[in-house]
Structure formats: structure tokens, C-alpha cells
Image 1 (cartoon, helix red, strand yellow):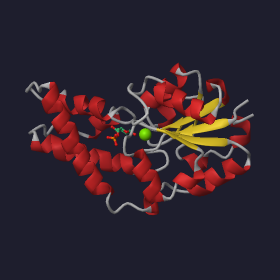
Image 2: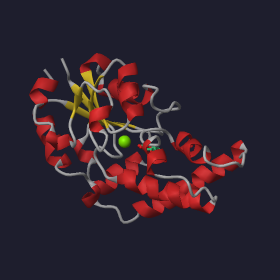
Image 3: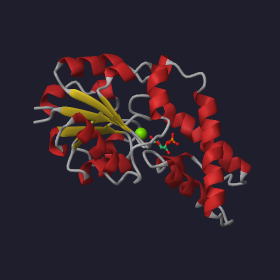
Image 4: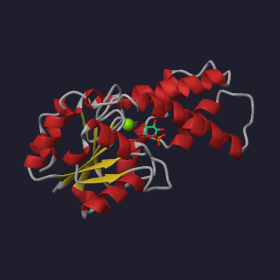
Length: 215
Ligand code: BG6
Ligand code: MG
């Protein structure tokens, strides 16, 4: 029986996925990697900052040292944090707050399982934090999705077995991580119907059949 729901953050609860793309695009343009595009960005969804950087650098002829890579990732994060400055609850995706409240009223435990080290700040700015029981994010983990670490940490924080949790994700890496962690999955977002999840819906609030999912 499902007792807990673990939500990815970027692209599931908030629309920050577009801001990540803009920040990476700015860095790529500065490096002369003009071929970096939205198709590449699809593979950045869900994965860590350093793994996302590798996707950008795939299209560069230049080889960067580890030290340079850290500087590039920091620079991108600076651009991303700049874009987050004016963020408020308008960044929360459609009907997410009422959906979280309704799930809470059903007695379910709710957590975030996000690769982002900016997750706590985003949850604070958007007013989502009080609606969640626990947060597991890039600050709690060392391995990037599709490794299940971030979801296993979330399940542990909720005091639940992985088999009692369902993960909600917009990325292939996240759906694969849920499976690797022994959890059920619901895919949402622009690619919702092509990720091989147990359930799928364009938006979180479009999934009306929560009773069936959590039974
Ligand atoms: C994920 C995003 O949620 O967080 C990725 O989907 C991003 O695109 C990752 O790379 C890490 O985010 P941050 O905020 O720690 O750079
Ligand atoms: Mg995501």
C-alpha cells in the first residue's frame, strides 16, 4: 500500500526547468557552444549540476580540467540564482497547491526528492515548504539520478519502505531512479507518455485517480 508520495521539484511542482535551460544556454553561448539546444536540455532534466554541465560540454571541442568545470558549474549556478531572485508562488505549476493539500487530507506523507541544491530556497520562496513533510535534495546526496539515492533518502526521512512510496517525475533519469529504488512512478510534463512509468498524466493535477494509485 502506498503511504508516501515523493515529488521531483523542477518541472513537477515548479516551472524552474525553463530557468535552468536559460542559465545553461547563457553559459553555452559564452563558451561558443552555440549548438546547445532544448533537445540537449531534455537530458539535463533531473540530473545533477555537474552531470548537466557534461551535457553542455559534449558539444565542445575544448577539453576542460576538473577545476575549470567547477568554475563553469558555479558560473551557471550564479546565472540561475539571478533568475530565481524574483521568484514567487506564481512559479508553482497549475493546481499543485490544492493537489498537495488534497493528498495530505487523504493521510498521505509528502516529500520532495530533487537533485537541486537550490531546492530549499525555491520551496521557501514559493510557499511550498509548509505543504511538505520532508525534503531530500542535492545537499543530501552524492549520486545523481538515475541513481535512486535522493528518493531512498526521502523514503527514509518519511520513515517508509521504498515499496510504500510513489515518485512523481518529469525526467527519464528520475523515472529510472524510482524503478532502481523499488518505487512506483507517475510521469508528468512535456514527455509524460514516453518514459515507461507505472502511471502518466500531462500535469500533476490531471491525475484524478489518486485513490487507485495509492491503494
Ligand atoms: C534538477 C534539474 O532538478 O536539479 C536539473 O532538473 C539540475 O536540470 C539539477 O541540473 C541540479 O540543480 P541545481 O539547482 O543544484 O544546479
Ligand atoms: Mg524535474
